[in-house]
Image 1 (cartoon, rainbow, N blue to C red):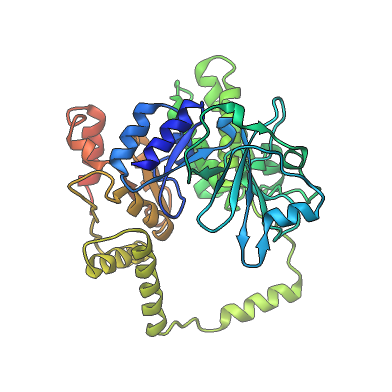
Image 2: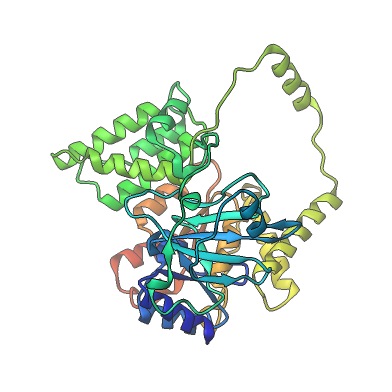
Length: 413
């Protein structure tokens, strides 16, 4: 297995790697958070994902990677010369599209930009992979780090470009609060605040409750700012010490995860009139259009998961559509994805449904308290996507927590 050998050679250099599919997307549950330099984990991934590629995560590996494209009329290397920059000798690899990656050592003490971005003007064919970005290993890594040259200045200096505060990784709590909608808290916001307890609330429950508040704020619910202050005091008072910093860290993480509320603008009378007239028009959707949407959903499922037959694909598409109409039915079926071997695509199928189902809640080890509150948090119940569900009936079968969770799942349909 060449991919595993390359990964083991990479971790021998201290680099961190992650398994990826042919679409270059991470295969593990938590994506780049699962990147490792442990040889045992690499071998286990190789057995679980026999067709996987392995990619090097730039930031954690101390790398700054220049990505040169040669396609669609672009030639990154040629463009670099036209701009008057040189390419210091370092370890490079070719990519299947005809381009190349040049691996450099990131400068010490310098915070590199996060992710993949065009280094120069758009369409130059020169990208930078730093921070939480990564590059697939298409060739055996160098034998020693001496073959990795220091990053040139043109790779480490960011060009002047407008601020991208909308991106979640740049979101901060101060900007988040400034964008929150004022007014009386909505019912959902009040319900989220009631989840906080002054009786030694666990850290895990606090993280989940803060995330719910952040999502409500991002969605434009009024009164979230006051709710945050009240929840913060409630949580801290329960421990009798200054635990507000724990709350603040959780809020910052949730803001980065869910992003900032959209900017809002005051509507003019003409805007309101146009909206009123548009709402008065009958909304109709021919059945043929609905069928076309479902066919497209089924085609997208087929792109990422190989199910046993087209009827399984149709069932998954219809089940996802059903979650949006759940209040129109007296009961709803559960959908189960099972396989005789690991690495067959069960988790990937849940990831796809997370993009399709109504109000998805992806979980693998949730608490009974959170699940009960979350199910009762809106007019329509959420869609619970439970990975590794068999653990409730395996080693954890006798746990009190597992028994309570089974009770929730068995109590309704």
